[in-house]
Image 1 (cartoon, one colour):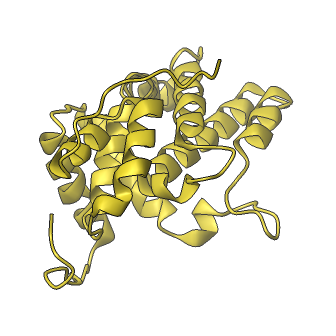
Image 2: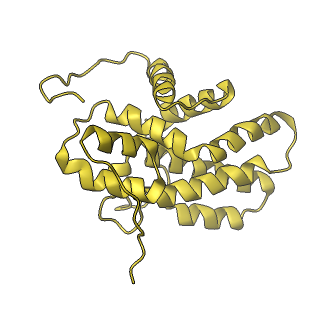
Length: 206
């Protein structure tokens, strides 16, 4: 961890190169391997979604993020397989970006990061099993790996986001909640850095 005094701003001249290097480092630190095509997809996604008009496209006034439920409904009502797949891809991409970069922004909200993990993973899994041909078929393997390793990729993106964050004892409760809901190894590791040994408990109420 770095102290507030040690935290500095690092200028970035090429966002794609920054995300490629940062993702590679985070994946290595998290002991996660990705096929080069999958890693390239994630880097491209992060670069593209860093633009607000993309990450917040189609949001209504006052709406913080694109509604995953609405995207799922649009996919179900799609007029063609291509339209359905494009909507599911958007659902998966939004879920991955938001869960990775903004997990702490869901504190005390009805919809938490585990919802995004579940929805995004299912969307990518559906895309991976789609019967398609041509260049689009090459993405099936990418979507399949993202579906299987969704939480791991979320953790890697979260590490990139956390590079500018100073952790303190005030974060323990939220990190513990994230660990309970998602089983995130990254959240577990951060808790241990803060001197907390997380123990699983049931979230059910009697």
